[in-house]
Length: 301
Image (tube, rainbow, N blue to C red; front, side, top):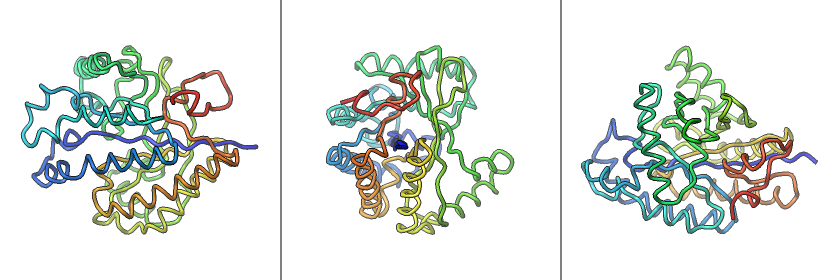
C-alpha cells in the first residue's frame, strides 16, 4: 500500500520578518494577533495529534536584540511563544535564521555570524538545531549551514511560477497568482541531497493570507487543491509539504482555520487508513538509509 506524508512547517518571525519594510500597521497587527493565532494553532495541532515544525527567528529569544528595535517588545521578543510550542506534544522546533537576513545578500562571513548566533540561542535553551528554513526561502551558503550541524533545510516550492521567477520576477508573480486561483494538484516532493552534508525538502504549497489579489483563490478552491496534494502524496509515496506564517492567518482567521482543520481531518483519516504519515521536517532524518519515511512518533512525542 502506498504511503505518502504530510509535512507542515511554520515560519515564526513576528516583526523580524518585515524588518526592512516595517509599518505601524505591521506592529499593531503583530502585537494584537500573533499570540492568539499561535495559541489557536497549537490547540488545533494538539486536538488532532499532528506534529509540526516551527522554524523560529533566533532573535525572538534574545532580549538584547529586541531592545534594539522600535515598537512593542512583544513584536520582537517571544520566548513565551517558543515555550508554549515546546510544551505542546509532538511539536518540533527548528531555525529560521537569527535576524531574518536574506542569505544571498550575505557574505560567507556574515552568514557564518548569523548561524553562530542561532546556535548560541538554541544551545543556551537546550534546543535542537537540525532543520533550517531560509528567510523568504532564498537558499545560499549551504557550506555554512552544514558546518554548523544543520542537516535539513526547506527549499523553494517546486512550482512552475517559481521556475519562471528565475528568468522574470514579474511573470513569476503573475503566474503564481493565476495558479492559486485555479484547480491544480500541488507538487509533491521527496528529500534530496543538495550538499554532501545537508538535505533539502522543498515546499509544495504555501497557505496564502487572504488579502488583495490573493483572495482570488476561494476557500473551496484552496481546500480542493490541498486535498489533491494529500492524495498525490499518498499515490506517489512522496510528501505534500504545506508551509505558512502565523501572520497569514491575521486576515479572515476563521476561514483559514477552517481550511486547516479540514486538511488535518482528512490527513488523519488517511493516517488511520494507513495511506499517509504526518511527519515534521526532522522526522525525515531518523534514518536516511531507510526507503520508507519514518512516522513522526518515532522522532518526537
